[in-house]
Length: 288
Image (cartoon, rainbow, N blue to C red; front, side, top):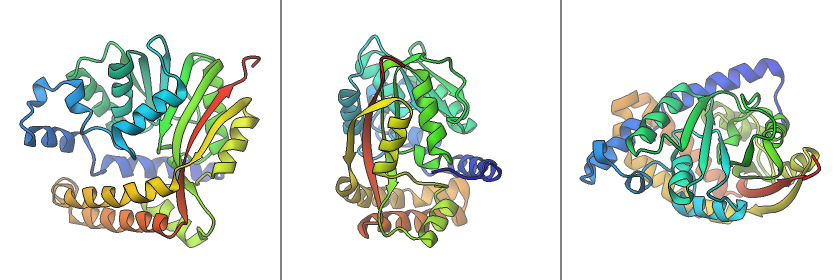
């Protein structure tokens, strides 16, 4: 589950371009707040959390991950591929823990920092620009590592999981959800997903389980979320289509139309049973 090294750089650049022109962005979030009559200069963490969760299942998915990982107030949590930081802020506000976000895209990191300052959580939540394949953190420096539907963009799954295992403490937890390949996904499907959705390589339920075990972790949960996500994604496609005009104003008609076609194809693969999803919880060996 990895790419040759000469393709890593291309995959990295594609991900940055993808998120620099993503329909869910800081401008869109602030506009949505204003449309609800909420002053963006006086927004609360609870109000912001209704608009900044760019993952499947929203706040409920965050709560499930908190419970599955056993995240507590005294924990230091790393959010790998943290985007604009919605889950990171939610964890800090909901649980009271300290959260560090790591993301590859500078525009997302900058937006995450500004949004966090708006709601006064920058004393508990910080964001770093960097690669999930070479994390700028010491060994065993986090109690919990999390991720939500973002590791699909990472080109080397084995190295990603090994880095997560390196930075989590012995006895600590790695808990994440991700987009997974299923039987029937063709090479042509994968080529289009790589080109349009920047998924260079996709993991599988058994593949992630194996990588976690090889990195010295005991897998406590490997849950198939495919039926649930198939339903959720129909609503997400409708949501993105409702943003088509705004996306066109920000990034042009071509990007808006391209996004619609790409996301419709992506959602269609779930309906055909070729894509799925999984939730994983693994504990690093206390003897590591």
